[in-house]
Amino acid sequence: MVKQRKIPMRKDIVSGEMMPKKELVRIVKNKENEISIDPTGKKAGRGAYISLDVAIANKAKEEHTFNKAFGIKVTDEFYDELIAYVDHQVARKELFGDAR
Image (tube, rainbow, N blue to C red; front, side):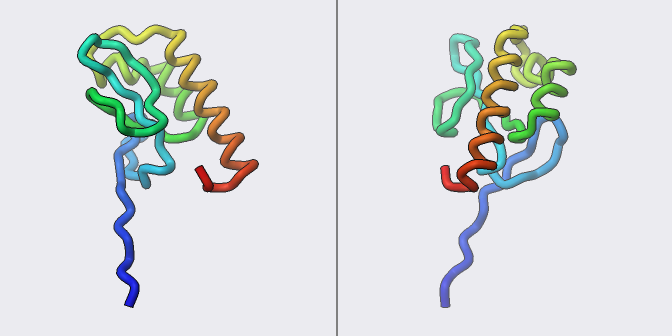
């Protein structure tokens, strides 16, 4: 009998919804208080997850979600970069399916 693999779940910081880790993107703050997108999910630092959904990314920008989560001022340029990244990932998923 084949054992069912456990799917890692994480909470979307904007919607508060628990989702499979593959459907989220990790944002990380390192010791130097630099914020970056972590496509591998392995960078060192404090991480927060956001859904791969452009509407959710726009909502995060409006509400300055990562300012609250990390306790520092996050630039609008970072939010714009995040929105572009999420949009790109959504387009990739539509083109190539779930194969990452």
